[in-house]
Length: 144
Length: 104
Image (cartoon, rainbow over all chains, first blue to last red):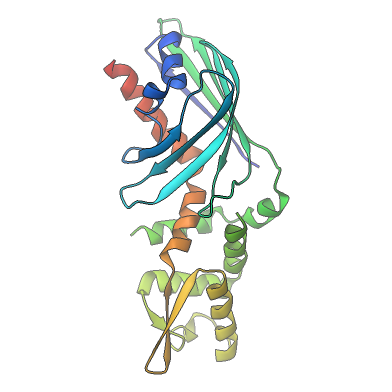
């Protein structure tokens, strides 16, 4: 399965970025795409343990995702597991997220997020291969 | 996940995929209207419609002895949920994180 790496540079120092990654009140300021609300959550990455969030779009559609915080090394690293739930609240394939913060030369922070999937659901994977372009098309049509 | 797999499996056939696309574009159609999506018999189209119905992708209502089909929006949304994984979530969220960091 695919993996995703996103690199960003923030002008804020690692300590501040880490606070935004780990504390509930800060996480809620950015968690989820613009326009989504987070009506239910257990969002804290300050210590190992369970986390979850339910995001909701303007049409009331809910997106639930949950996992375990596995690693916390302030102000450098946060690791957690990740899985979407389906409409009947069954948890899907689990994947791993690791966020690393490195001090940048200008006092800012080099931010790296890696989201790596584990092939723990072969059945789903077989059905899913090759469908991406069709699905994108369907989604596009369904949203017009 | 099970529902999603059933839905992907149902869509994994060119005729059924064409039926879903046609219904997305047109709204409601009868089995007769859907006949020309593929060069196959009416009973074959009916079988495909049944598979799509059982997968929860389309719904059927009867009007003056005609069967009218339309998309089950919830099912298409569940596919949308699945595709909103990873990249879309993180890209959009990290844009907001950058703004939030600047505001404080």
